Length: 62
Image (cartoon, rainbow, N blue to C red; front, side):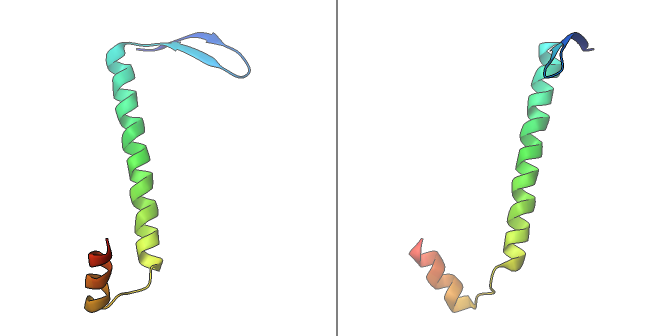
């Protein structure tokens, strides 16, 4: 369980267990990864379609 230790107009200080803190860090990383995947999916939808030959040429250039 977490408890607010101090609260100002610009900052909140919270006390929590290390287990809960680590879980919050994992959730934050998962959220950032999901944002990246969503952004890349939108980019893939708007990217021009390639033929098989163009795709192979592009892969060879990498």
